[in-house]
Length: 82
Image (tube, rainbow, N blue to C red; front, top):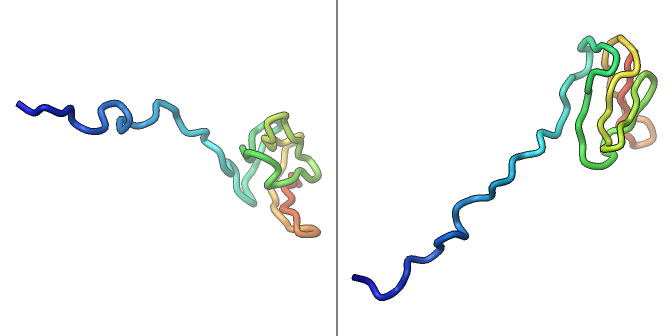
């Protein structure tokens, strides 16, 4: 019998937390319907353009039907629904 307990009893069993499922959900050129989520993000990485609104958790969603479009304007990533 050993006189010492094995190392790392509870600490190395992994975290019970699930991932946040962030990222781009619809890509450029894809069809989108009103209120459909385009991007989930932590902070303003992408900014809303025409036809896109921002939720309180920085989620970008479509304000109207159309196609998703990405562009860069003044070093900001803009998402639009055209």
